[in-house]
Amino acid sequence: MDRLQKNNKSVGEMEFLRFVFSIIIVLHHSRNFVGNKSSLFLNGAFAVEFFFILSGFLMMKSIRKIQTDSQNLGAETARFIKKKYLSLCPDMIISWIIGAVATAVVCRYSVDAIGTMLRGGIWELGLLTMTGIRTSTLNGAVWYLSSMLLCMAILYPLLRKYKTMAERVMIPLITFLILGYFAVQTNSIRLPFGWAGFTYRGNLRAFADLGIGVILYQITEVFKEKRLTVFSKVLLTIIKYAGVASLVAYMYVIRKPTIQEDLFHILVIMLVIGLIFSNQTYGARLFNNGFFRFLGKFSLPLYLSHYYWANILKVGLPDSFDKTKATVIYLMLSIGTAAVVMALSALIKKCKPFSRIKSLFVKEISSESICVEVVFDALK
Image (spheres, rainbow, N blue to C red):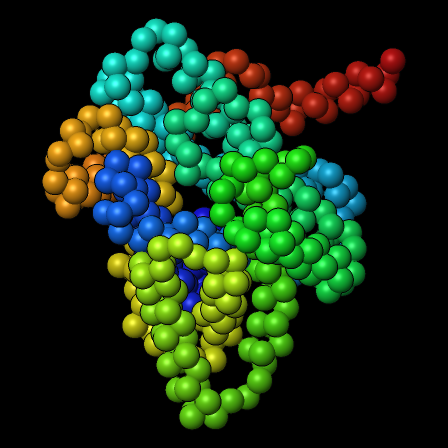
């Protein structure tokens, strides 16, 4: 869930959509404790496609801004992934700790169960669960972030080294082959933890969606240069908001989606994101304010702070408990936890306590010391 640039005219509009799709994912996971029949947005897992495609789009946008060739592609890729990972911290860590404590208390975990959860947390917080290395999973929603970083670690160097070849041939070809595999093999892009023989299905799904974002960026860059009439812009504005309404309706109404329906609505996601970033439509100014930017920032802690509550309520609430009330409690717990995570994260980023702790263990070398060492080595 990448942060959008503040100077982008479309930032408010896209941040609002990030919040909307985050809420849909939260409501989708209510199925864990209310069951599929009573769950709102049973098809809400499809919202992950929006985030993957958007992330691919923004990754491609970042790469296009780099003017020079890489002198050390490995180091550059590592810095890119590190930056992405650190942007998720400390929200991810704070949320995980809250979820671990709540789960251990409500579910009355034994010492052995707590130990298993903590061991699994090492891989989970390292976003390595989608490699297959995991002992337990506390926050199942983190699979999206794990798959995103793993696939970006492949896509980024391809796009930097092979450039046009990767943008126009390699990545589009692999993307369509993966979607074709899903269509033929299982007739679904879902089931991220399903094993595809050599990796999780979620990783293939992430690669394909990120690849779609790469393709979409190239199309949008061409389209945004077109000089359109007022009539065309009005028409595209109607199409844009109709596309958003169509996506929400699809995830709410359809209970058993097919791969063909998913693929069609992936095209709708492309249409919506492309039109927003093309700046060829109206309506962006309505969302370009602090309130909608706040909602966009709130979407990450909300996404990170809901899944374990769904599992806790499954254990903590009796089967006879009213489903609507249970969903309201779930939303309150998720939003409340997200607010705490967001506040603590902002405090930590401001105070930077980890840099102070680091100084207790790692000695910083001053420029004067480096010069002395260089001179000393030269004299030897």
